[in-house]
Image (tube, rainbow, N blue to C red; front, side, top):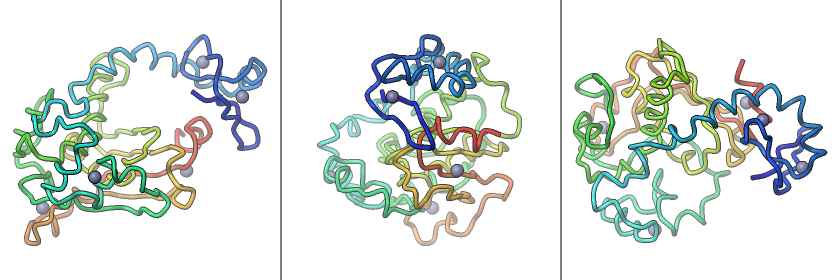
Length: 276
Ligand SMILES: [Zn+2]
Ligand SMILES: [Zn+2]
Ligand SMILES: [Zn+2]
Ligand SMILES: [Zn+2]
Ligand SMILES: [Zn+2]
């Protein structure tokens, strides 16, 4: 944890040796930085404390890092190269950071939006679901059956992100941390890294929350300054690689688009801009 103290836009960043006693969510290098940050922190401290109190609930996800989908996918990060190569996606597009050889090479500064899965339509969700979601999904098995995907699809590696968002929201509404979702959902997504290559996969939230307008603010230091404040409206799902598939021509209605915006920097510093 790093000291969150800031002055004139520059951040202390020293290793934190103490935390806020109330929320336990932010750290400081010294008492003096904690004291001089108090006027800023007191605005957010209560909210952080409520969230930290439920950290046990929120960490209890069935959609954890694809332990479930299949034996094939329970491969160590190092062995994933051959798994990805078998599906023809090794070192490509959204998949660059999904094995150990790609992660170190990637420079987020040069990456722009990647629209496609590079998989055939049987292996990825590229269209509206044939049946709109009824009830609640509680496992990968439920999800794959509903979306007609094999449990062995590598897409699960990336769908892990939107499904984790889905599940976090299910839990938060279930224990009244959030009000019932009506027609709009605003998500603050903190600290994205390789997700920046995989933003198209968040289009799946259209299927997971039918009829809900979704806004996601991505905030984190891995977002390059060059892309800060970039807006991305997803009017389709991430595309498959079958040239004749209807995902190439069908757009979801405008009101259903997932609207995303990127913000470079730390949540503490940027929060005020998009929480209005
Ligand atoms: Zn400090
Ligand atoms: Zn606090
Ligand atoms: Zn590799
Ligand atoms: Zn911004
Ligand atoms: Zn398709």
